[in-house]
Amino acid sequence: MSVLAGARVLVTRAREDQAALGALLRSRGAKPVALPCIEFEEPRERAPLDAALARLMAGERPDLIVLSSPQAAQRLFAELTAQGLPPEGLAFAAAGDGTARLLQTLGATDVVAPEGGAGAEALLRLLSARAAGLRVLLPRAEEGGSELPSGLRALGASVEEVTLYRTVPAGELDAGAEALLRRGAIAAIAFASGSAARGFASLFADDAGKLAAACAVACIGRSCADAALAAGLRVDAVGEGGLEGLVDALESALAAKSGR
Image (cartoon, rainbow, N blue to C red):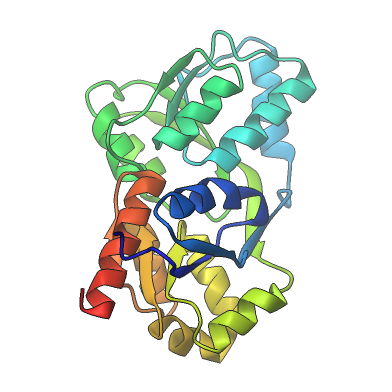
C-alpha cells in the first residue's frame, strides 16, 4: 500500500489548476486538500503581447512558440481564438507532457516535448541540437524565471519574451484547508511551481516556515525547490517528470518523514 494512502496532501496550485494533481493523488489513495496559494491576473501592459499577436496575424510566424505551462498554453490559445487565428502552421515546444497534451487538445498539430521530463532544463536538452538560428516566441508569466530564455539564447536562438499573465498570491485563504494545516492534520504539501511556494510564504507570513516544517514538502523541479528554499521553506524531495514525478516525490518525502 502506498504511504500516501489516507494522507491529506495540500495542493497549492491555482484554483483552476487543481484537478490534474488532485486526480493523481487520489489514484494513490491520498486525500488532496485544495489551498490555492496563487491566482492569475492580466498583464500590467498588453502592448508587447498585442504587437506579437498582430505580427502573427500578418503572417510573421516565429520558427517556434515555446510554452512552459498549461496556463500559458490556455491563455495563448484564448488570445489566438479571439484574433481568429488557427493554430495550423504554428510550431510549438512544450516544457512537459501536460502542456503538450493540452496544446494538442486545443488544436495544435506540431508539438514537441521532452520525454520523461519536464521543466526548462528538460526542454533545453531537447532543443539543444536545433535551437541555433531559430526565431522563438516565448509567451509566459511576468515573473517567469530566466533559465529558459537565457538557455535558449545560449543555444543560439533569437528569443522574444512577451507577458501573457501575472501570477500573484491568492487574495484569501480557504478557511477549512487553513484550519487543517494549523492543527497539524496535513501530512504533506505539494508545490508545483516556484510562484506557489512564494505565494504560500506570502499568505502565511511568519508562520509559513513552521507550518511547512510540520509536513513532508515536495517540489516539482529544481527551480521550484530553489524558490521554496529562498522563501524560507524546507524541501524534503524534488520530483522530475511533471506532476507524476511530483507525486513520486511526495511519496518519498512522506515515507522518509514517517520512517517507512
